[in-house]
Image 1 (cartoon, protein in one colour):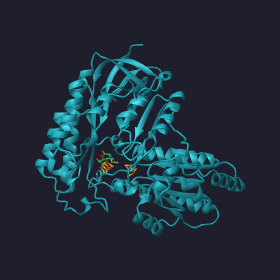
Image 2: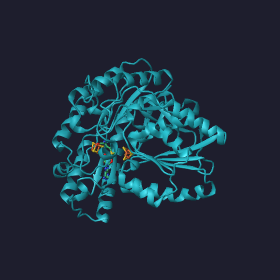
Image 3: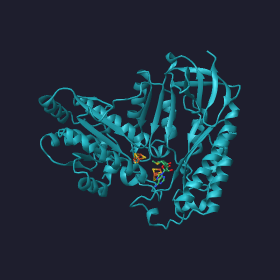
Image 4: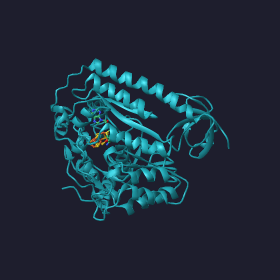
Length: 465
Ligand code: SAM
Ligand code: SF4
Ligand code: F3S
């Protein structure tokens, strides 16, 4: 059984020290190349893996050539994500031939599927270590076993109660993500995540709040709270707390920062939560609310547990109180048996909602899920056409929708330089991309920008302070 909640246990410090000694005995200055695929939760796990590697004495490199250890933190959400990893694994084999002491590690969601571990073992025998998403804290132990001569060290067990004890090595200088819960209980019929990430486990609120407080003190300006379904946060804790209550406490932390979060499930978007989003001072006026389809038939077959009408009620609640409230979504095209009428209902929905952005995916059959047993009648060509139709409609909607900002002044967190020479890019409170001329010294700061033009993916402006 997974731990009921995530406790503050000790990181395996002794093991880490033993690996460190082992490494120093062989060679100084060991370099690791860490690549995380998939969602932001996986990237956050990758930062914790980097944290452990740092403690073990590794530094980091961007290239395979310079690496003594290559680690792939993988994603299994679509077939294309898995194929990409297999392609890359095929490519790194040559580096192992040149440098037999190179350590190759595979972890993350793919490494939590038994059939994948078996496949890797037989087809990519040069992979040294494999561990699943709930065995993150076992990595130092596995590395030690490898250095002690174990041919294939692997662990897909469940230990992630240690998560809080692992200090991440953060890659971004002013944006930080904070996982608040792990796993998913929803079992949408197309989705592999509940199988590779286990059931919902929430971190304790005091640990989350402590981490956010520290990040703000350290100068981080954007805090992204992460979970597969953040608005079911806290239900599994001994002293239950809602996501709305957690957000209110984070909103009250002193300092200059913006809070974002993802993802939210429409079935758990309570009016109390929506009120916190509308009233919060530091919470972005943006909600990523994956709808997946605009057809009730398909939503039912997907086991999403809401109707289009219920979804639209959430949208109108938000937009009545704040007509500018920004909404983004995920959509799947070509779910088994999606008819032309079902697809047209999705087109209608995106027109009704007026999303600021949509993330569209062609349905991908995932072994072990319920939908994998359903007959898939739509051709690949038809699916691609539907996807293109959705995207071109969205481009038109976004360009028109973005006009609402012209003449207004937006508060923007400057992310970095734009491709246009002399221009900067950032995001406003509602996650709208803003491009404007400015000096690089402003990166990482909040500035005010008067909006002068609108495109389908961004708005343009000039600095006003
Ligand atoms: N937990 C989030 C939610 O419920 O909205 C989403 C998590 S999932 C990692 C991100 C997105 O991938 C989903 O919203 C869905 O649109 C897409 N996705 C998941 N499984 C898929 C599949 N088998 N084929 C295509 N897209 C898929
Ligand atoms: Fe997957 Fe559904 Fe869970 Fe999101 S809510 S992770 S789509 S099963
Ligand atoms: Fe992929 Fe795992 Fe995230 S399957 S999308 S990396 S939870």
